[in-house]
Image (tube, rainbow, N blue to C red; front, side, top):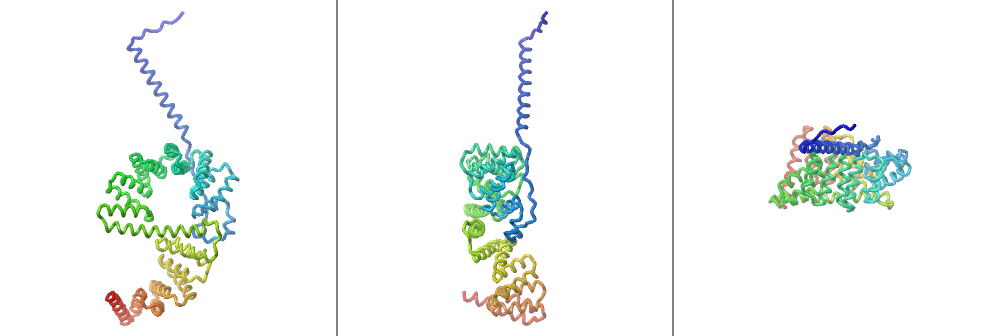
Amino acid sequence: MFCALPFLSVRNMQQVCNLVFYLGRRFLFCLFLFISCKEVPERYYLQTVNSKYSPERFERSDPSELASLPDSVLGWLYIQNNRMRSAVKIYERLTNEDPNNADFYYYFGVALSKEHKKNEAIKAFTRAIDLRPGLAEAYFAKALLINERGDGFESGIEIVQKGLSIDPQSAYGHFVNGFIFCSRGENDKAQKVLQRAIEIDANYANAHYYLALIFLRREDDVRAIESMEKTIDSDPYYTEAYYSLGTLYARTGRLSDGEKMIEVFQKMSLSEMDEDHYLRLLYRSNDQILPEQRVAAHYNLGLVYLRRGELIAAQLHFSSAYKLDTTYAEAAHNLGVVSSRIGAHDKAVEYYESAISQLPEYALAYKNLGLSRLSQGLFEQAEYAFKQALSLDSELTAAAEGLATALIQQGKVQEGIDVKTELNNRIKGFKGDG
């Protein structure tokens, strides 16, 4: 016996088909979501490297002390302190010893990329991803290199999108995405993702800068200026932004502001060139440098940082120069300058006196010694230092001003007034000669 199937009208048949189609579509959608979720690996974070070495201590450490550190710590310290060539050697050894450590391959890729070894760096990042598919940073780094190497725009975007699926809140990942779109000339897409990077991190200087470039392409000077100004607000050392902003100011009629920005750009460019030169000499050269060259390079690098106001870096390199040559009066003096700027006047006095003991005719050291003594309230000692400075260089205006203050503070009011009067007359005489 067979059961008779109920009769279905055309309308009922259409409803059944629609229902089957709907259920089938929902099933496929759910299946797609399930597969997609399964394809996104769990986020993997690089392991924290615990190190007691500050940049200052690292710089001052003896090679034997550093050699006693585990390679995993030493390699990380080399990267943090921009010693990429040394880092490459360390991570090459580490990846050979432990070929299943994704962190080692990632840092190996970072060091290789900084040494402009793109192909080797891409291989290292690829290996890191193979070992830890959830390492989002490796996708972003690889995507940038793929784009630079010219493997194809689509490849770079695909890789960075995989990274963003793992970490959608990465400002850096969105920036990389926007940078690749920008390099392709796809301004709408680039603008959208760069703005997303800024939403996540309002102080992301690179994102502001490339957003400004997009506005420049569209000849939207108002928004370009706004984004370029935000670039500098986020990173006052973003050299290229000063040049771009200078040209924008000039183009919109703000000639004086434009000239100031171009002047800053020129100074910063020279500073960066000097910095790069001395860093290469100290840390990236394949040739051995003479001890006196090393001393000079540290000292000159300290000057670069001092002019920028980067006092910790300046102190680090002046200290390195002074440690290598304890008779270097100028290095001792500039250690005093840095110490006084951070308010450590007792330490500054020690350095100034050391400089003077090495170079008794060091007028500038006497002048700065006097200023530190003034700050300490030791007016008699300040008076002596200022008088010594002026006896060596009578044109030191700051020493004359300091002497007047020191005298008045001791109750020698008329003497102080006389010094001020003499100083003012001399200044007027200079102006008259001009």
